[in-house]
Each structure stands twice: as structure tokens, then as C-alpha cells.
Amino acid sequence: MPRVGLSAGTIDYQDTGGDGPVLVFTHGFPMNETQWRKVIPHFAGYRCVLPTLPLGAHRTPMNPDADLTQRGVALLLGEFLDALDLTDVTLVMNDWGGAQFLVTEGRADRVARLVMVACEAFDNFPPGPARPLAVLAGMPGGVWLMTRLFGLKFFRHNKKAYGGMSRTGIPDDVLDDWFAPATASKEIRRDLAKFATTTPRATVLLEWSERLRDFDRPALVVWAADDVMMPREHGARLVELLPNARLVEIADSATLIPEDQPDALAAALSEFLVQNGAEPVPS
Image 1: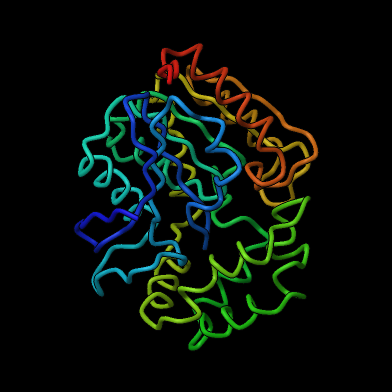
Image 2 (image 1 turned 135 degrees about the vertical axis):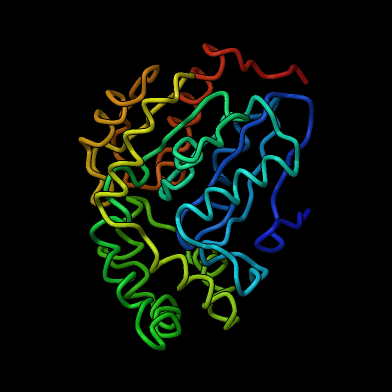
């Protein structure tokens, strides 16, 4: 897997290569690029790039002084786009919504299209059911305890934990991969704690959300109709906020639409891309 050195440290990424339009997929907490494993095969003719951001499942620790706040990770994503010189990007996010802060920070110059898939928005950082984990992460030894809980099937498949993020269920081998770095590394646990405990106040988050009005390029909002993490009304609110957006609701899915309904998500994304100047390159 290729790697790139950035100001906060080294991150790895998946890159399908080719000359097609660039799609950049971000992931959730603590997850990695395998979150999109069912979706990427639908996008032959595109260059799909999937960075593993420092949200707790990254494989290499960040520098001790790295800024791993919501804003800091968003800026790191912008730095990643710069480092790979990716332009005319379609930025696709699911679960973690912090990638939208590239707009807030005036760093969305490389982003031509924005796709928000059942992700954190407004003051829903982190979502209500996940807030006890954020509290735990702020306690001495809390992240170590969290990683031990992640290893228990009862906890990881509980509807108030990761079991609530997918209606079909996340396979244990995928969860093992997501949880392994923090389980094995004290430095990764340090990074996870920094990210999990530095979410801004609700008033700040709502102020940042208002700046999405500045993104006048095409946007697609894909929301799950039955989701305990991301309120259904947030999808409609985002479409009202973004000047050039449309909403697609997908049934029979929780937050991880790429897991539960990958074909429906790929169809909606493909239609959006073709309608907005990003047709696939013929193979």
C-alpha cells in the first residue's frame, strides 16, 4: 500500500490508479479504507483514492504534536490532496463528517463535487449513541479499556455500539482489522484519544455548518431512512444548506450504507457523477 508523508506524520492510502475522474473516499471512526470494499468495484473507469486518516484505525502513529482535532484532520485531508496533486475531486464521506470542514476552512479548492453519505453533520459530532465512547476515551486508561471492549462480540455487535451502524452486520474480520492498530499500539491509542476528545462545542459546529452555503458546486446527500446515529432530518437540512444539492434516501440501511446497500449507493453516486461532468473513462 502506498504511503505519503504529511506534516502530522505518514499515512497510507489505496489508489486504483488510471486516468478517470478522481473519487476520494473518507472513512469513519475507527475504521479504514475497507469500509468501501463493496462500493469500489462499481467504479471501474474512475481513479478511486482512499486515505487512511488518523481516526484510530491508522497503521502508523502520527507525530506526538500532531493536530488531530476535527479541524486538524480535515486540514490533513486537504494536505493529502495537495501532496498527490489531486484536482477536480469528488469527495465522498460516510460516518465521519469532518471532511466537510475543508469548506469551512476555505480549503475545498480541489473539490469539484461533494457527496455526504449518512455522516455527522450540524452538532451531531459525535452521534448520541457514540458519546459514551468519547467520554471513555478522555479517562485515564479509557482507550485501552475501549480496545478490550472492541474485542468482545457482545460489545462490538451491540445495537448501541457498532452493531447499530449496520443492519446486515459488519463481519468480524473487518472489525478485527479496524480495531487491531489501537489494540496493539500505545501511540495509536494516544492518537485515537486526541481525536475523540477534541470535538468543538455545539455552537462552533453549527457555525461551521453554516459555511457549507459557500459550496456552490454540485453536491449529493445520501441518507439512510432508518438510522439511529445520523438523524433522518439532517439529510433534508443539508440539502437546504448546500446551494446545489439533491437528496437520495436509501431504505433498509443504517449509517454504513456502503455495507448495507452498496449497490443502491453506487447507483446513486454513478448517476450523480455522470450528470455533473465526471463520466468514467472507457476501459
